[in-house]
View 1 (cartoon, rainbow, N blue to C red):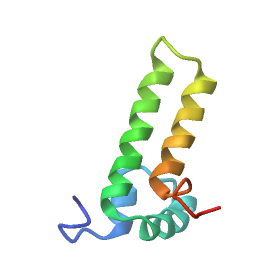
View 2: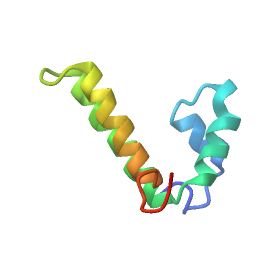
View 3: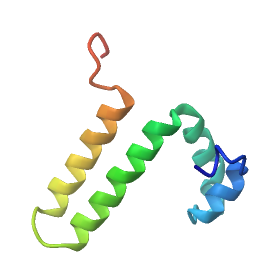
View 4: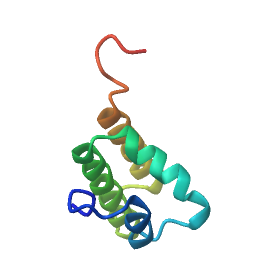
Length: 82
């Protein structure tokens, strides 16, 4: 990944076209996720983006599935966690 190659987080944010006002929040959130989980989260977002642009399930259901997937990655549904 870019971060593993030593690329600064600010540079990564630029390549991902993160709006400059959101860079600090982006950096803070990136530090809270393991890199593997962050990659999985971005893949979920890409899949949702493709689903929203295609035909099939409703946009509401697509977004609900994305939220549940992200919550699952973050461990919201982990046993013993409220």
